[in-house]
Length: 422
Image 1 (cartoon, rainbow, N blue to C red):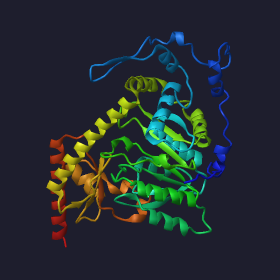
Image 2 (image 1 turned 135 degrees about the vertical axis):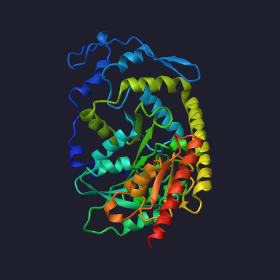
Image 3 (image 1 turned 90 degrees about the vertical axis):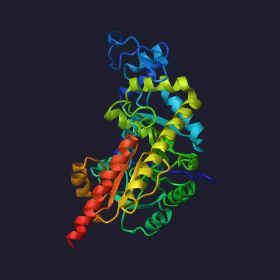
Image 4 (image 1 turned 135 degrees about the horizontal axis):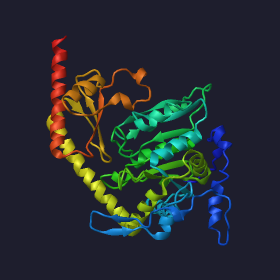
């Protein structure tokens, strides 16, 4: 597949095109030049910081010490795209895992959602139409509802985005309406559906993106939580440079570290860095130093071995959860067993709407789930929703069994009550 040339200015919002580097932040790289005397940046004097060192104790008994130079650099202001040690390590990780066919750069953020929202802010112009999975990730839905854009539902099935439906939407797009310029997708272990796109689907969708000049925002926090062989990413087949990919350490190291990274063409990622400069200056360098110290001690092979253990753990949890679902919910619900991630998307049979049932009666029975309506872009337009999202990531087998038994009891009671009222 031969790559084509992309005009990235077509995708940027007018405000993004007008962005300029921070007058102060642009000086930071210059301070590293030997012999440079800096009278410019207003950085506090590091001699007054009370931290002498930071050590990390691991659960295997190992103790790691953050390198003194890395620590000193991380305690003061740093680059908007992340500390260079971790940025370089992550860039090599992307080469190993995805082997992108086009040149790329990496930028670190305060979790991947920080970077996703900055990318959307960079791209959206007033009146834009954004292609979005339906149902889709509620965190990004909440952000986009406050942006000057229209969310366009993209239909899913048990393997994610349906290429034929997407092509039909774009081929028949009204001539008097602005055509979408981006598709947002969670291709692995989708939140809330738990479904994953096959490589064949990704190739089809990528070709549609080429035909209709779309950017693909590949939000992939569950990539390392695939239970079988890893399906190649959109980044790995991106011969044009039309993929912005987002990864996260939240599911594999710690959600509290808030370390994520974006990968893509410099023409886009560098503009995201300009957004960071005016929003929060930089991601936490101390969190990055902790992350770098750990992953550098493992090496890329050791990091990958760790992710396999994490995936095996969630695979086991998924199998247990689905076995209890079959035990209690057979005939009461339908679902697709996930092959990645943390979620199961239940279709509740015999009910009209899951919202009040889940937020009132389920709470009374002391079982928490998320009503499916929360994951749709246009809840007021679709009517009642019979779906609910359940997570198996952080619940014991005993509680899985009890929680699903309570849900089953609730459904039986609700169905019986409805039949009596007819």
